[in-house]
Structure formats: C-alpha cells, structure tokens
Length: 301
Image (tube, rainbow, N blue to C red; front, side):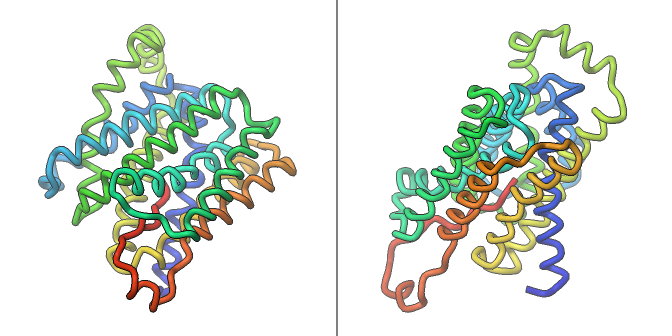
C-alpha cells in the first residue's frame, strides 16, 4: 500500500476506535435509541439528496438498514447505556468477525477453512474472558453488545450479497432506514418525556457526539474504507481493522480513565489474535485447488 493509504487506513481505525468514547458522551445527553435515530438522521440528511440512487436492489438497502442501523446500533447503544464501558465495548463488538464466518457458512454455504475455525475459537475465548472481567459492567449490557456483534454479522452478509459499487452512497441510503423506526421504538420504551427533554436541552457535547458518529464514523469511515477496498484486495486492507479495539481501549483509558485489568489485556490479545489468524491468506497453490468460496475479512465499524 502507498504510505498515504496506510495513513488513511490508520486514521479510519482511530476514528472508529474513538467512536465508542464519543458514543458514551452522547449517551449522557440522549436516551440510547433516540441517540441512534439522531445519528442516522444526520448521516442521511442532507446527503441523500445529492448522492443519487443506491445502485443496488432496495431489499439490500432495507436489510442492511434493519440489521446494522436498527438492531446492531440499537443494541450497542443500549448495552453501553446499561454499563458496558466504552473500551470493552469496542473489544466485545469485534465478535462480529466470528458471527460473520458462522453466518456465511449457514446462509451462503461457504465452508470455513480450518485456520478460520481456529481463529473463531480463539476470538470467542477472548470475548468470554472479557465478559468475566470485573470492569465489564452489567451482564445485560455485555450480552446486548454480543448481540450487536451478531446483528453486525448478519449485515455483513447482506452487504456482501448487495456488493454496492459505491460504499458511501450505499451507507447514505442505509442511513435513511433506521431513524423513524428507532424513534417510534424509543417513544414507548424510553418515554416521550425523556426524548422531548433531551431534544429541548441540546448542548455542545450532545450535538458534537451526534455529528461525530454520523459524519465521522459513518460517512467518512465507510467512504474511506470502501475506497481502500476498491483500491486494494480485502486481505491487504482488513488487518487494519485490528487497530479498532486498540484505539478504542486507548481512547477510553486516556479520555475516561477506564481501567485496564490483566483480564482485559488477555481478552484483548485473544480477540485480536483470533481475528488475525482468521485473516491469514491461503497459499496460492491451495487457492488454485479449492473451488469453495470463503468468508472475506470484515471491516470494522
């Protein structure tokens, strides 16, 4: 990769990693479902009026919008609101790589390679270890973020089937799907009074957090990542996603004083090692001999 593209990949990983701390800041001013709705509303408007049609079947726009926008981010925001620290959330969410390989095997009939199975087992052990960490907050929050990883795995499969030629344009249209459903779900579960109070008392931190997750993490992040994937093959780009939990944990430590325990270090090492093992390339001779497709490495949020 060109040095400028390496720098871009690192910047995207840093933006995505710091995103978890920013989400934590936004959750102080918004109920979680309303915050997620505002995030996607800002990502969709006014960009949707300028990007043109998505150039993929609408069923994939809706499928990714529901799985990624409503389910994944709804569960992630609620899980963090329930007490899962930002740094650990960035780590636990990487379980999406395990779920993506599993769902690819079930839904796409893609037989995982042995090295991918080994990687899944290692990464899953790291996720379990993270759940045992005394700093992990409530069990409910941890399980919700694990569920968010599973929903992200579903959306990864849908995105692979959609194969959008323009990731930025696709993500803008995907962002159109979640705001209204999330707002409607928020009303009975979070209360219209809490939603109204949050909107009436907007401040710089809440608005800044919403803009960061909408424009920085969503639009810039996916546009830059999509550009890199169009420029280089996936095995070259995907390893940079391993930096996301590192930046996430580091950001939480620097900005929020989140404590790193020995268990956290072990869980981090296992998750990153597991994902890295699953990304190992096959020898060219083996690739030529095998006809079955395998699950491609997955980008980070």
